[in-house]
Image (cartoon, rainbow, N blue to C red; front, side):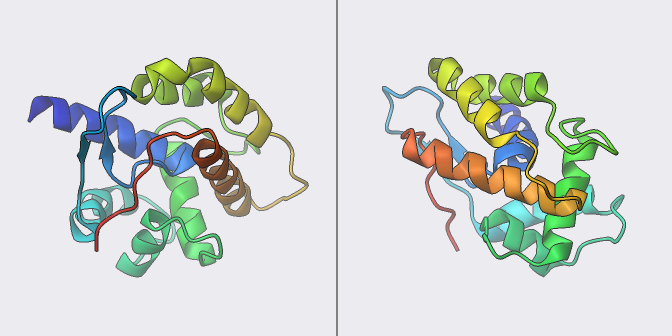
Length: 160
């Protein structure tokens, strides 16, 4: 249970940077074991993080973020941005993720993919021409998720 709690903390932080926390995933590629969570469980765990956001997100916004909807609403994108600030992965006023901290989170979860993770972060964490911090946070997250799927990271879908 303690290992699961540690994984959950890491996954929540990584959620902000690349949206891969949809389920608790074993980082070991030799293992096919996947610990899953239901949507309601994940949203309930995220609710307290939203209380310090402005505006405070509604449940539907958290669900959109968890589902990694490419066309998420602006409040959902802003919740992702708020969490990034809380975990110091995208400090206030910044237009990019903190590459070192993002890589550290990815390496905690996927230690066998350090070089791939670094390349994904570098590729997606580039100036996009966007100016809205919520849009930037979402855009980088979606890019990282796509790249991680292409690189065969174990990212199962969440259960309803």
